[in-house]
Image 1 (cartoon, rainbow, N blue to C red):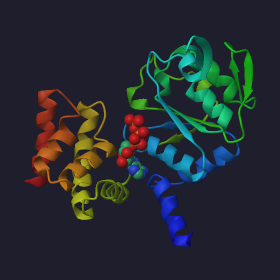
Image 2 (cartoon, rainbow, N blue to C red):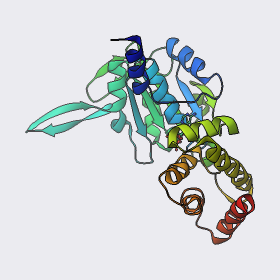
Image 3 (cartoon, protein in one colour):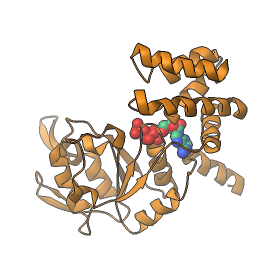
Image 4 (cartoon, rainbow, N blue to C red):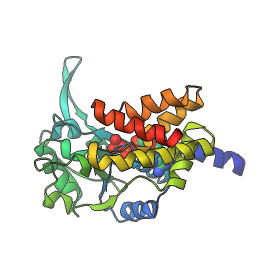
Length: 269
Ligand SMILES: Nc1ncnc2c1ncn2[C@@H]1O[C@H](COP(=O)(O)OP(=O)(O)OP(=O)(O)O)[C@@H](O)[C@H]1O
């Protein structure tokens, strides 16, 4: 295979990620030194893309779990299931990652039930073990295993916070919305829309985000900007694309919506 073909294949396999700072080098240090990583930041700002990109760069599989308030330790570790009359043990995603040496990414980890932290603790200190009570195994994490978790401090409330004894087992990286030139590059690359048109959408997003503090739980995400640009690129009128991608998903409150539309009108005249 030619060098060009090799490069083309590598690019196909590694999801595009636009670095915002030194986070890629930091991830690699953490991976090599077997340190777990916590990503903090608003929804849709690139946390998941960062993890899948780094996993591909490091040649590791990546198992992502979106945590929710019904998620139990058994959903992560595994359970006995009936298969053709036999009871067989089936590994959950965390156990698979531990056995195979893959990256396990737990999105919105604060949502998970309390018993989940119990299985994470021995995995996130120098023991790197996963006790499987049901099978009586004590699994030692394989070489390439890494645990990455994320949470959105914006949704945080007093009941749903990580305990210091959990937080202080992780290195932590803070994510935010990218600066305008980088966000423009991301939106253009992801949507295929011309750069100048993406730059105008990014400027609009900045104005909409200024409203966030007063009226919205969270500002418009990079993800929504990509959706908006994708619609425009597909031929949807910019007005309708902005309304369906940048206004309606943010709020149901008619007054807040009117405020957002005012910002759009002021920006586009
Ligand atoms: N730095 C970036 N490089 C490339 N794409 C990005 C970047 N930041 C955001 N995106 C785009 O935004 C989309 C949403 O990002 P992603 O799914 O990683 O968000 P997230 O922070 O994990 O959100 P959530 O917390 O809701 O899971 C991506 O699919 C991608 O199109």
